[in-house]
Image (cartoon, rainbow over all chains, first blue to last red; front, top):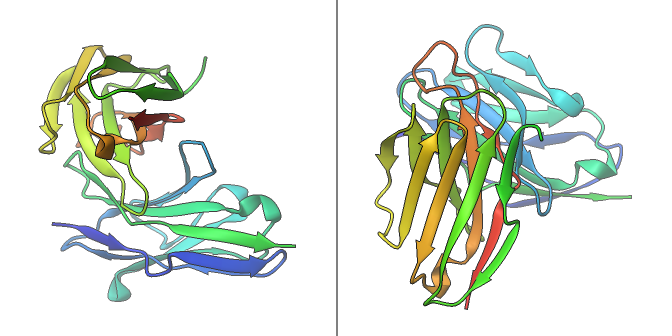
Length: 113
Length: 116
């Protein structure tokens, strides 16, 4: 069965600093990979996704992620964080044909001014 | 209304009450999902409906009863809940998994449920 690991529960960065959130997955074939963001009291919003093709994908709000098959990773990056990026970020994997979207436990991002 | 809407946004109920959560999607999708989000736990998939047929039920207790009367509406009927059922319940929709149209799941804002 597929699984997703987000090793960092909580990260604090200064506004304007760069950000990298880690995500590792376990799945035999190439999965569909997603990053979602959840602001307090809100549902999940899709930041970006990888299905196939170029391993560096661009998303909304200036985020990007890189799929590295050799490391089974799909890390999320942003070159300069804004205070409004403070939220919880979830990595998720989908196997394509099944209905199950498996989520990691999330990383809470705090941004200091 | 656009996207995925959920009502109510907040619900407090006693263990003997019966209540229902409602989800509506305005995206033309044909699959809908219920997830449970508890503190410090990954999102748990509860139910999946595709083309109005339940295709997945992840060992959810019978005190949770889903209903999908059409492809735009999804309900979660609740009865005799336990305090540990307190959580954020999220609804999502998509095109049917396994089809070429499937790309992502769109989530609603959730219903914050507290069971006393």
